[in-house]
Length: 464
Picture (cartoon, rainbow, N blue to C red):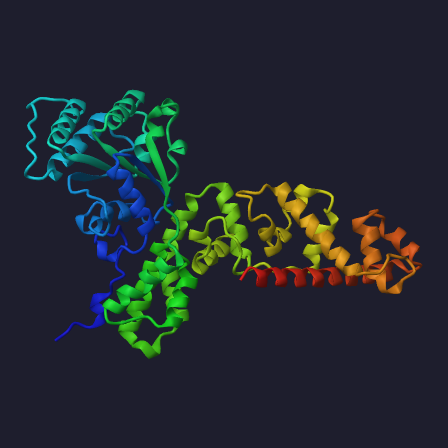
């Protein structure tokens, strides 16, 4: 008798993926990676937590994965070392662990002989000489390498020694870090030339095609495929983050296996997936910089299809929901009050850049080429958009105080866009009471808001 599909949920990876069959995507990066290693170069992998750095290292080192590509790496010895516990260890600990790893991974045909008494550095150096002399080439896969570069026990001499071995062609290093190596090193090694020997390969979200493969193929092979609608739903909930995809697929697969294909309540699955991922979301959030948190705060409140600074996180509807929950924010909607607040600050670019109008898709689109726009840059962009909306309010006619069709335009003209007159002065200019003036001003702001809505909707369609 066959086991039920619930016993074969393929989306079980809470930790790193170790089987190449469950490693999806990254083909372009793998080819670049193998090309660098084949040429005895060193590589720095950089990416946020849970993006797949460890999975990449573990799977890329396996013969089954290497066989998919055209590079001859049969004489390369891949040694993986987990450095998560090395924030307080010493150079001697490192060399001992690396040397033991090399000995364990050497093929039987490689004869290594070491003196009974030798310190870590000498032992490592002697091992490299013997391995290279026998036409083999070591590749060290150093996961969580930032725990080494932030550890003051590892001094300039240590990194100079490592660099020398790579420079003379005895070894290649592959490091995996959350941030670029230049950003994760203690002050004592800030000027070390060791960090100049690496090709930098960022590890970001999967491509859309890779994300679809990760969603669909394991479920098909497990005999309980996801429908097209379910696949679209998973992409909306998870974005293109591989770990988010794995966990949401896991929850949906379990529900389908337990309750049948026709009885799935996606709202219930969404709650299960959110609870499953919440601690991971919190850990990710805590590790972000203040600038990154601010960017995600803004992106969590924007509508769909907006340009995103951190797409691996903010493309996920569940992660955006988490951000809104912890910041008690709501999906952004323009209101007359928010527009009036912006108009009161129209000459102050910094203050304007902090208003909620910064969340408009118009602003995001016009700042698309700026990696990290400043508050002032956002404010100047908002001012430009407001002026454009204001001129649309006037239309093709020539401005005149006596034209009753331009009353909305003229009130805004004298109050915000040109002279900044006091409310009483504007009421006297148009021979109306102050009470009437405030009613007219509210209508003028609503008219300007409607034009902004039209511009915003048009920009959203253009961005589809």
